[in-house]
Each structure stands twice: as C-alpha cells, then as structure tokens.
Amino acid sequence: MDKKKITEKMSWGKKNRMRKIIQDDGRVVMLALDHGYFLGPTRGMEQPAKALEPLIPHVDSLMLSPGILTSSVDPAFKGGIVLRSSGGSSIISDDLSNEGIILTPLEAIKLNASAMAISIFVGSKYEKQTLMNLAQTINEASKYEMPVLAVTAVGKELEKRDARFLSLSSRIAAEFGADIVKTYYCEDFERVTTTCPKPIVVAGGPKLETELDVFELCYNSIQAGAVGVDMGRNIWQNEDPGAMVQAIKAIVHDNYTPKQAEELYNELKNKNK
Ligand code: 5RP
Image (cartoon, rainbow, N blue to C red; front, side, top):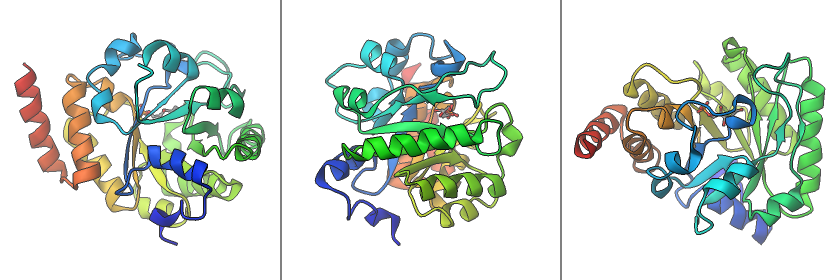
C-alpha cells in the first residue's frame, strides 16, 4: 500500500491531525525536543523558548513534552504538536525502559495535540510493559481519533541500531496500530521501511561529526522510504541551528542532495555571522 494514502480511510478528525504532521507532499520536518523528559536540561535545550526562536518558522511539527509546550511555545503556533506521553525513568535510573504512561488522550486534546508519542523498548527488561503502554494509548486515543506515534527506543544501548532490531521494533509498533513510527537510520534501512506498513520518521541520535553526515542521514533515509525526520540534537546542538533546520527542510521537502544542503547551510551560516 502507498504510505502516502495511509490517511485515506481515517476519520476527518484523525486525518486533520495527521495532516498537521505529514504535509501535502507526504513529508515532514518534525523537531524533537522531548529529551528533557529523561535527560533534564540537555545541552542546546537549556532554555527551550530561546532555542526554539530560530527553528519554529521552519518546522512542520514539534515533538515535545506537555510542560515545555505550555511554558515555551507560543499558542499561535500552527504546526503539528506531538506530545511525549510515556516516561517515568531518568538517565540516572537503573533502566530507562521502565516507563509508564504520563499523559491521557483527554489531556492531549486539551493541549490541542496532533498525536501522542509512546516509546517502546523491544528486547529490554520492560519490553512488555512498554508495549502495553503503546497498546493502551492506542486503544484510548482511538476514542478521540487521536493518532499515536511509536518511538522505537534503544535506551543506552545505541549498538542496537541495526536493521534486524529496528525492523523488528518498527513492525511490532505498526502491528499494534501506531500511526507513525519513529526509528533510527541504519545500514540496509530499506529493510526497515519496506517491512513497516506505516510512515516512518527518523531520529538523528547523538550529534554527528559533520553537517554533511547529518544531511546524508536525512537524504539516505528519505531515499530509502522514510517520510521525514523527527530530529533533535543534530539541529539544536549545531553551531547554527537555524541554518541547520533550513538545510534539512530543503532535503525533506525540496529534494536537495546532501551537497546542496551543505552549500545552503554554509550560505545561511555566513549570512548570520
Ligand atoms: C527520545 C526521543 C527523541 O525525541 C529522539 O531521540 C530524537 O532526537 P535526536 O534526533 O536528538 O535523537 O524520542 O526517546
């Protein structure tokens, strides 16, 4: 099935919410800034309202926690709002996968959310608990035509980012009924996108060495079938986050190559000096 047509059978309300996230061209630039929910004040996002200023005009949607939405985002924001809805462990706890549900669909609706985001930690000690968090949220959110985005979390074990693991996690999320799946780019990424019947967005992970590395990650993900990015640190930990987000947007929506995106980034960065 063409993933661009995935919203066709949805109700008007759900379709409208999905369209706030995935744009008319079937692509999305989602800015992830939910890291504080387990990392606290992450570098580059110590003051979210300030960090968001150069980014907001260039993103289609935001993925963030409820408290940062209400404290740091102008209610005039017109893009999609994807609310972090699972949590409960911090970076200093024993096991990041020990999560519960932190937001109900009703609270999400009160915040005018376009979707709720739930992490699943496949292969972890709390695998079942996190899968049940996803199942319960999908069942409850469905009553209000609220989409759910599943995050195929890898916790501290970043080595788990291979096609075998990510296709397993992404497919499970899709089978449970997630409307969008967030995962990581990896070698043989097509194996992940082709075996997951729902739209896939990619996270950036920890900051990469060069801007070109980030542009290649975005470009290759889209070429392999992702609908866009749901990226954080590689944007807002960059020297020039505004230039970075615009270059990524050019890849996602205007099919720029990594080299063209790098040129645009340098041009914008030099202008901002
Ligand atoms: C954490 C998340 C983050 O939003 C995700 O990791 C995306 O951010 P980054 O691009 O910095 O990895 O879902 O569980």
